[in-house]
Length: 374
Image (cartoon, rainbow, N blue to C red; front, side, top):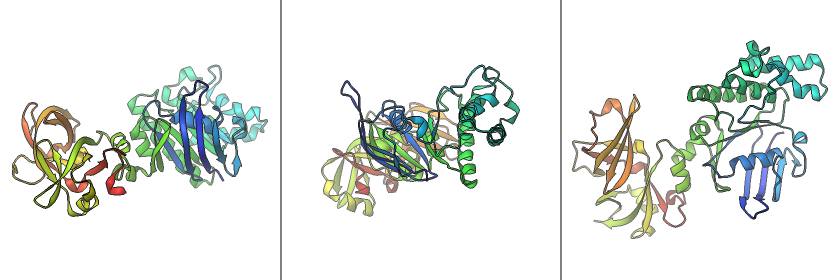
Protein backbone atom coordinates (compact mmCIF):
# COMPACT_ATOMS: atom_id res chain seq x y z
CA UNK A 1 0.00 0.00 0.00
CA UNK A 2 1.29 3.45 -0.90
CA UNK A 3 -1.31 5.78 0.56
CA UNK A 4 -0.15 9.10 1.92
CA UNK A 5 -2.02 10.94 4.65
CA UNK A 6 -1.35 14.39 5.99
CA UNK A 7 -3.13 15.02 9.28
CA UNK A 8 -3.18 18.59 10.61
CA UNK A 9 0.36 19.14 9.31
CA UNK A 10 1.92 22.51 10.16
CA UNK A 11 5.25 24.12 9.38
CA UNK A 12 6.44 27.09 11.44
CA UNK A 13 9.97 28.41 10.90
CA UNK A 14 12.19 29.60 13.78
CA UNK A 15 11.43 33.25 12.91
CA UNK A 16 7.75 32.55 13.57
CA UNK A 17 6.63 32.46 9.94
CA UNK A 18 3.85 29.91 9.48
CA UNK A 19 4.28 28.34 6.04
CA UNK A 20 1.78 25.48 6.29
CA UNK A 21 -1.50 25.87 8.18
CA UNK A 22 -2.67 22.51 9.53
CA UNK A 23 -3.47 20.79 6.24
CA UNK A 24 -5.38 17.52 5.97
CA UNK A 25 -5.05 15.46 2.80
CA UNK A 26 -5.51 11.81 1.82
CA UNK A 27 -3.69 10.60 -1.29
CA UNK A 28 -4.90 7.23 -2.53
CA UNK A 29 -2.74 4.25 -3.44
CA UNK A 30 -1.73 4.58 -7.10
CA UNK A 31 -3.04 8.12 -7.43
CA UNK A 32 -1.37 10.93 -9.38
CA UNK A 33 -1.79 13.95 -7.10
CA UNK A 34 -0.66 17.38 -8.28
CA UNK A 35 0.09 20.27 -5.91
CA UNK A 36 -0.43 23.58 -7.66
CA UNK A 37 -0.50 27.21 -6.66
CA UNK A 38 1.36 30.51 -7.04
CA UNK A 39 4.92 31.06 -5.84
CA UNK A 40 5.13 31.02 -2.05
CA UNK A 41 2.02 28.89 -1.50
CA UNK A 42 4.09 26.13 0.25
CA UNK A 43 3.58 23.41 -2.36
CA UNK A 44 7.31 22.52 -2.47
CA UNK A 45 7.54 22.80 1.32
CA UNK A 46 4.68 20.30 1.65
CA UNK A 47 6.41 17.89 -0.74
CA UNK A 48 9.71 18.23 1.10
CA UNK A 49 7.99 17.48 4.42
CA UNK A 50 6.56 14.28 2.92
CA UNK A 51 10.05 13.41 1.66
CA UNK A 52 11.63 14.07 5.06
CA UNK A 53 13.78 16.92 3.76
CA UNK A 54 11.87 19.40 5.96
CA UNK A 55 10.84 18.78 9.55
CA UNK A 56 7.17 19.30 10.39
CA UNK A 57 6.20 21.44 13.36
CA UNK A 58 3.07 19.49 14.27
CA UNK A 59 0.67 16.91 12.87
CA UNK A 60 1.35 13.52 11.30
CA UNK A 61 2.55 12.25 7.94
CA UNK A 62 1.54 8.66 7.26
CA UNK A 63 2.91 6.57 4.36
CA UNK A 64 1.19 3.22 4.04
CA UNK A 65 0.23 2.49 7.62
CA UNK A 66 3.37 3.97 9.15
CA UNK A 67 3.82 7.39 10.77
CA UNK A 68 7.03 8.72 9.21
CA UNK A 69 7.44 12.05 11.05
CA UNK A 70 10.86 11.14 12.40
CA UNK A 71 12.08 8.72 9.73
CA UNK A 72 14.98 9.85 7.51
CA UNK A 73 14.23 10.14 3.76
CA UNK A 74 15.99 6.85 2.92
CA UNK A 75 13.57 4.91 5.13
CA UNK A 76 10.34 6.42 3.81
CA UNK A 77 10.10 4.40 0.60
CA UNK A 78 10.20 7.48 -1.60
CA UNK A 79 12.16 8.60 -4.65
CA UNK A 80 12.39 12.26 -5.58
CA UNK A 81 12.94 13.94 -8.95
CA UNK A 82 14.21 17.50 -8.68
CA UNK A 83 14.06 20.52 -10.95
CA UNK A 84 17.84 20.53 -11.55
CA UNK A 85 18.24 16.80 -12.49
CA UNK A 86 21.05 16.27 -9.88
CA UNK A 87 22.97 13.83 -12.08
CA UNK A 88 26.61 12.92 -11.49
CA UNK A 89 28.48 14.60 -14.39
CA UNK A 90 31.32 12.05 -14.50
CA UNK A 91 28.94 9.07 -14.77
CA UNK A 92 27.13 7.72 -17.81
CA UNK A 93 23.35 7.54 -18.00
CA UNK A 94 23.55 3.84 -17.06
CA UNK A 95 25.85 4.53 -14.10
CA UNK A 96 23.65 7.36 -12.82
CA UNK A 97 20.58 5.12 -12.88
CA UNK A 98 22.43 2.19 -11.30
CA UNK A 99 24.29 4.11 -8.59
CA UNK A 100 21.60 3.97 -5.89
CA UNK A 101 21.08 0.25 -6.47
CA UNK A 102 24.82 -0.43 -6.10
CA UNK A 103 24.76 1.34 -2.74
CA UNK A 104 21.97 -1.06 -1.72
CA UNK A 105 24.23 -3.96 -2.81
CA UNK A 106 21.71 -5.32 -5.30
CA UNK A 107 23.10 -7.93 -7.68
CA UNK A 108 24.58 -6.83 -11.02
CA UNK A 109 22.04 -8.86 -12.99
CA UNK A 110 19.09 -7.29 -11.14
CA UNK A 111 20.58 -3.81 -11.55
CA UNK A 112 21.02 -4.37 -15.28
CA UNK A 113 17.45 -5.62 -15.63
CA UNK A 114 15.96 -2.67 -13.74
CA UNK A 115 18.04 -0.07 -15.58
CA UNK A 116 17.22 -1.43 -19.02
CA UNK A 117 13.51 -1.84 -18.19
CA UNK A 118 13.34 1.75 -17.03
CA UNK A 119 15.30 2.96 -20.06
CA UNK A 120 12.82 1.24 -22.38
CA UNK A 121 9.86 2.88 -20.62
CA UNK A 122 11.51 6.28 -21.04
CA UNK A 123 12.94 5.78 -24.55
CA UNK A 124 16.54 6.35 -23.45
CA UNK A 125 18.06 2.95 -24.32
CA UNK A 126 20.31 4.67 -26.87
CA UNK A 127 21.58 7.11 -24.23
CA UNK A 128 22.86 4.63 -21.65
CA UNK A 129 26.54 5.17 -22.59
CA UNK A 130 26.33 8.96 -22.69
CA UNK A 131 27.30 11.38 -19.95
CA UNK A 132 24.97 14.24 -18.89
CA UNK A 133 26.92 16.90 -20.85
CA UNK A 134 26.21 14.91 -24.04
CA UNK A 135 22.45 14.99 -23.48
CA UNK A 136 19.72 17.59 -23.86
CA UNK A 137 17.76 18.92 -20.89
CA UNK A 138 14.81 16.67 -21.69
CA UNK A 139 17.05 13.62 -21.95
CA UNK A 140 18.75 14.42 -18.64
CA UNK A 141 15.38 14.78 -16.96
CA UNK A 142 14.34 11.36 -18.27
CA UNK A 143 17.52 9.90 -16.78
CA UNK A 144 16.62 11.50 -13.45
CA UNK A 145 13.15 9.94 -13.68
CA UNK A 146 14.71 6.59 -14.63
CA UNK A 147 16.97 6.76 -11.57
CA UNK A 148 13.81 7.05 -9.47
CA UNK A 149 12.01 4.20 -11.27
CA UNK A 150 14.77 1.61 -10.78
CA UNK A 151 14.53 1.99 -7.01
CA UNK A 152 10.91 0.77 -7.13
CA UNK A 153 9.82 3.21 -4.43
CA UNK A 154 6.38 3.27 -2.85
CA UNK A 155 6.00 6.97 -3.65
CA UNK A 156 7.37 9.13 -6.48
CA UNK A 157 7.85 12.80 -5.64
CA UNK A 158 8.36 15.35 -8.43
CA UNK A 159 9.37 18.92 -7.49
CA UNK A 160 8.75 21.11 -10.57
CA UNK A 161 10.77 18.70 -12.76
CA UNK A 162 9.95 20.38 -16.08
CA UNK A 163 10.42 24.05 -15.25
CA UNK A 164 13.94 24.17 -16.77
CA UNK A 165 12.74 22.83 -20.14
CA UNK A 166 11.47 24.78 -23.13
CA UNK A 167 7.75 24.71 -23.99
CA UNK A 168 7.94 21.88 -26.54
CA UNK A 169 10.03 19.65 -24.26
CA UNK A 170 7.68 20.31 -21.34
CA UNK A 171 4.76 18.99 -23.38
CA UNK A 172 6.74 15.91 -24.41
CA UNK A 173 7.92 15.17 -20.87
CA UNK A 174 4.55 15.64 -19.21
CA UNK A 175 3.10 13.11 -21.66
CA UNK A 176 5.99 10.74 -20.90
CA UNK A 177 5.48 11.01 -17.11
CA UNK A 178 1.71 10.50 -17.46
CA UNK A 179 2.32 7.42 -19.63
CA UNK A 180 4.84 6.13 -17.09
CA UNK A 181 2.26 6.40 -14.31
CA UNK A 182 -0.19 4.35 -16.35
CA UNK A 183 2.45 1.75 -17.31
CA UNK A 184 3.48 1.24 -13.69
CA UNK A 185 -0.14 0.77 -12.63
CA UNK A 186 -0.76 -1.73 -15.41
CA UNK A 187 2.39 -3.63 -14.41
CA UNK A 188 1.18 -3.85 -10.81
CA UNK A 189 4.05 -1.73 -9.48
CA UNK A 190 3.70 1.06 -6.90
CA UNK A 191 2.63 4.12 -8.82
CA UNK A 192 1.58 6.76 -6.27
CA UNK A 193 2.92 10.06 -7.63
CA UNK A 194 3.01 13.48 -5.98
CA UNK A 195 3.84 16.26 -8.40
CA UNK A 196 4.51 19.93 -7.64
CA UNK A 197 4.09 22.58 -10.32
CA UNK A 198 3.15 26.23 -10.71
CA UNK A 199 1.95 25.46 -14.26
CA UNK A 200 -1.79 24.88 -14.19
CA UNK A 201 -1.71 23.30 -17.68
CA UNK A 202 0.58 20.59 -16.31
CA UNK A 203 -1.73 20.18 -13.34
CA UNK A 204 -4.89 19.91 -15.46
CA UNK A 205 -3.43 17.45 -17.97
CA UNK A 206 -1.50 15.17 -15.60
CA UNK A 207 -3.32 14.86 -12.30
CA UNK A 208 -5.98 12.36 -11.24
CA UNK A 209 -6.71 14.99 -8.61
CA UNK A 210 -5.31 18.44 -7.97
CA UNK A 211 -4.61 20.09 -4.62
CA UNK A 212 -4.78 23.89 -4.97
CA UNK A 213 -2.80 25.75 -2.31
CA UNK A 214 -2.66 29.39 -1.28
CA UNK A 215 -0.33 30.57 1.50
CA UNK A 216 -0.08 27.10 3.02
CA UNK A 217 -3.85 26.52 3.05
CA UNK A 218 -5.66 23.96 0.87
CA UNK A 219 -8.32 25.82 -1.11
CA UNK A 220 -9.75 22.79 -2.94
CA UNK A 221 -8.87 19.19 -3.79
CA UNK A 222 -10.73 17.71 -6.74
CA UNK A 223 -10.49 16.25 -10.23
CA UNK A 224 -9.29 18.66 -12.95
CA UNK A 225 -12.73 18.91 -14.57
CA UNK A 226 -14.50 19.60 -11.26
CA UNK A 227 -11.98 22.27 -10.33
CA UNK A 228 -12.63 23.96 -13.64
CA UNK A 229 -16.41 23.65 -13.70
CA UNK A 230 -17.16 23.90 -9.99
CA UNK A 231 -14.54 26.03 -8.20
CA UNK A 232 -15.38 26.22 -4.50
CA UNK A 233 -14.05 29.72 -4.08
CA UNK A 234 -12.88 32.85 -5.87
CA UNK A 235 -9.19 31.93 -5.60
CA UNK A 236 -9.56 28.56 -7.34
CA UNK A 237 -11.85 30.10 -9.96
CA UNK A 238 -9.28 32.75 -10.81
CA UNK A 239 -6.24 30.47 -10.66
CA UNK A 240 -7.48 27.50 -12.69
CA UNK A 241 -8.04 28.21 -16.38
CA UNK A 242 -6.12 30.04 -19.09
CA UNK A 243 -7.08 32.77 -19.79
CA UNK A 244 -8.37 33.06 -16.24
CA UNK A 245 -12.00 33.52 -15.28
CA UNK A 246 -13.38 37.06 -15.47
CA UNK A 247 -14.14 38.05 -11.86
CA UNK A 248 -15.51 41.48 -10.96
CA UNK A 249 -17.04 43.16 -7.95
CA UNK A 250 -20.78 43.46 -8.59
CA UNK A 251 -24.20 43.62 -6.96
CA UNK A 252 -27.28 41.43 -7.12
CA UNK A 253 -30.52 43.35 -7.74
CA UNK A 254 -34.19 42.54 -8.28
CA UNK A 255 -35.54 44.07 -11.50
CA UNK A 256 -39.09 43.46 -12.73
CA UNK A 257 -39.30 40.40 -10.50
CA UNK A 258 -36.07 38.86 -11.82
CA UNK A 259 -32.67 38.56 -10.15
CA UNK A 260 -29.88 40.23 -12.09
CA UNK A 261 -26.18 41.02 -11.82
CA UNK A 262 -25.00 44.57 -12.42
CA UNK A 263 -22.21 44.72 -15.02
CA UNK A 264 -21.24 48.25 -15.89
CA UNK A 265 -24.51 50.08 -16.48
CA UNK A 266 -26.28 46.92 -17.65
CA UNK A 267 -28.17 44.12 -15.93
CA UNK A 268 -27.56 40.44 -16.68
CA UNK A 269 -30.45 38.22 -15.59
CA UNK A 270 -29.73 34.96 -13.78
CA UNK A 271 -31.50 31.73 -14.79
CA UNK A 272 -34.30 30.70 -12.41
CA UNK A 273 -32.34 27.89 -10.71
CA UNK A 274 -29.33 30.12 -10.06
CA UNK A 275 -31.52 33.03 -8.94
CA UNK A 276 -33.13 30.78 -6.32
CA UNK A 277 -29.74 30.00 -4.75
CA UNK A 278 -28.73 33.65 -4.37
CA UNK A 279 -32.03 35.22 -3.33
CA UNK A 280 -30.79 36.09 0.17
CA UNK A 281 -27.91 38.05 -1.42
CA UNK A 282 -30.17 40.46 -3.33
CA UNK A 283 -29.10 44.03 -2.65
CA UNK A 284 -25.64 42.90 -1.53
CA UNK A 285 -22.20 43.09 -3.08
CA UNK A 286 -20.92 39.84 -4.61
CA UNK A 287 -18.15 38.65 -6.89
CA UNK A 288 -19.44 37.82 -10.39
CA UNK A 289 -17.41 35.28 -12.40
CA UNK A 290 -17.65 34.00 -15.95
CA UNK A 291 -15.11 32.12 -18.05
CA UNK A 292 -13.84 33.65 -21.33
CA UNK A 293 -15.41 30.88 -23.46
CA UNK A 294 -18.83 31.75 -22.03
CA UNK A 295 -18.66 35.25 -23.46
CA UNK A 296 -19.54 35.29 -27.14
CA UNK A 297 -19.57 37.97 -29.82
CA UNK A 298 -23.05 39.16 -30.83
CA UNK A 299 -22.84 42.16 -33.13
CA UNK A 300 -26.32 41.89 -34.59
CA UNK A 301 -28.44 41.43 -31.46
CA UNK A 302 -28.14 44.62 -29.45
CA UNK A 303 -31.52 44.09 -27.80
CA UNK A 304 -30.85 40.48 -26.87
CA UNK A 305 -30.82 39.86 -23.12
CA UNK A 306 -27.38 39.14 -21.78
CA UNK A 307 -25.69 41.28 -24.42
CA UNK A 308 -23.35 44.15 -23.43
CA UNK A 309 -21.22 46.51 -25.50
CA UNK A 310 -17.50 46.55 -24.80
CA UNK A 311 -14.55 48.35 -26.34
CA UNK A 312 -11.78 46.14 -27.79
CA UNK A 313 -8.36 46.82 -26.23
CA UNK A 314 -6.24 43.81 -27.28
CA UNK A 315 -6.67 40.88 -29.68
CA UNK A 316 -4.49 37.78 -29.27
CA UNK A 317 -4.69 35.52 -32.32
CA UNK A 318 -4.04 31.89 -31.41
CA UNK A 319 -4.82 30.32 -34.80
CA UNK A 320 -8.01 28.38 -34.16
CA UNK A 321 -9.26 30.88 -31.61
CA UNK A 322 -8.80 34.46 -30.49
CA UNK A 323 -8.56 35.96 -27.01
CA UNK A 324 -10.40 39.27 -27.03
CA UNK A 325 -9.65 41.71 -24.22
CA UNK A 326 -12.30 44.41 -23.91
CA UNK A 327 -13.43 47.00 -21.38
CA UNK A 328 -16.83 47.88 -19.95
CA UNK A 329 -16.91 51.02 -17.81
CA UNK A 330 -13.14 50.83 -17.36
CA UNK A 331 -13.09 47.18 -16.22
CA UNK A 332 -11.32 44.62 -18.42
CA UNK A 333 -12.85 41.33 -19.52
CA UNK A 334 -11.60 38.48 -21.69
CA UNK A 335 -13.59 36.55 -24.30
CA UNK A 336 -12.39 33.35 -25.95
CA UNK A 337 -13.84 33.15 -29.46
CA UNK A 338 -13.47 30.68 -32.30
CA UNK A 339 -11.68 32.29 -35.25
CA UNK A 340 -14.12 30.62 -37.65
CA UNK A 341 -17.21 32.20 -36.12
CA UNK A 342 -16.22 35.86 -35.96
CA UNK A 343 -15.31 38.58 -38.42
CA UNK A 344 -12.10 40.54 -38.14
CA UNK A 345 -12.09 42.34 -34.80
CA UNK A 346 -10.26 45.64 -34.56
CA UNK A 347 -8.68 47.30 -31.56
CA UNK A 348 -10.60 50.38 -30.43
CA UNK A 349 -13.90 49.20 -31.94
CA UNK A 350 -17.08 48.69 -29.92
CA UNK A 351 -18.47 45.17 -30.01
CA UNK A 352 -21.50 43.51 -28.51
CA UNK A 353 -20.78 40.53 -26.28
CA UNK A 354 -23.30 37.95 -25.12
CA UNK A 355 -22.78 36.66 -21.56
CA UNK A 356 -24.01 33.08 -21.12
CA UNK A 357 -25.44 33.39 -17.63
CA UNK A 358 -26.19 29.66 -17.44
CA UNK A 359 -22.43 29.22 -16.93
CA UNK A 360 -21.70 32.08 -14.54
CA UNK A 361 -20.54 31.89 -10.90
CA UNK A 362 -21.43 34.09 -7.94
CA UNK A 363 -19.08 34.28 -4.95
CA UNK A 364 -19.83 35.61 -1.47
CA UNK A 365 -18.12 38.99 -1.19
CA UNK A 366 -16.70 38.33 2.29
CA UNK A 367 -15.95 34.59 2.39
CA UNK A 368 -15.32 34.35 -1.39
CA UNK A 369 -17.06 30.95 -1.44
CA UNK A 370 -19.04 29.88 -4.50
CA UNK A 371 -22.66 30.50 -3.48
CA UNK A 372 -23.97 27.99 -6.02
CA UNK A 373 -22.07 25.19 -4.23
CA UNK A 374 -23.12 26.06 -0.66
